[in-house]
Image (cartoon, rainbow, N blue to C red; front, side):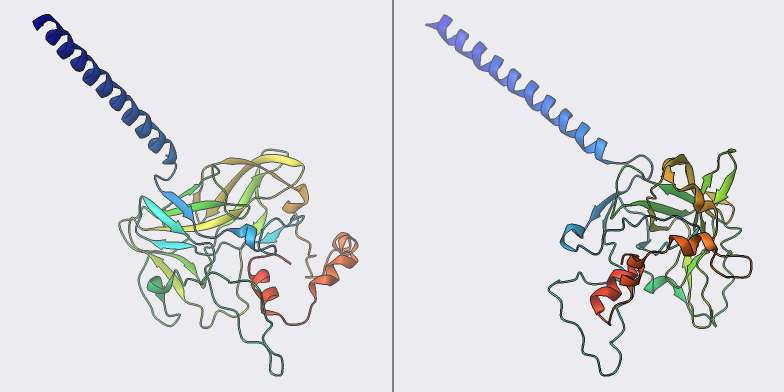
Length: 289
């Protein structure tokens, strides 16, 4: 009887130890899965809050063939966090329709727009002695492992001990550059410049704080190295495709359209001219027809 009792104890001890080993192994496996979700490029996880499949006009999949205007809007600005619930739907609300025209009805329940730079704006008449963009040291990382609406997230961090200027209006003045066939870096975008700077606020970024924007994913037959540039700062280099004519402006030195561009315009471009509709306005804000 005593022998049987000892055998039972040994059996229970074996089960306890075996269960403990399985539990440890499971915990170890889970920790590995969590680590894999953290991107070493930024140490920040972005969680998208918008399902673009619900909105047929929002996907940013237009094909660019010439030198284009840079459109890097602020999507987040603030302290660095482990996780950011990222809402690409940020910016200003559409203006009211012209007098005499009713606001168009829509079946879409649009996500609420967020004014992300509100706490970091300086009135255009206010003078503060912050470091200018062109000389400030800024760490720029573009994460090509995830996409938001056919764009890559871009992380900008102030590495200066002082506050810096990081943008104006709604724009981060980044431009994308690409290596041409000779291996030389050349811009494929040009900065967005306001026709009148009166009333345009400046955006500042405190030390160690970060800003997030989106970089377009271009299409084309020429595969090359790409990077983002802001002042004297460059991002990490990544591979992508472009049209080789993106190195070239569609305007002549006199400001007229080039003949090649005129020929490329087709009748389908006239479809962009439509009666007032707030839905179309929102679509145009996102760069889609």
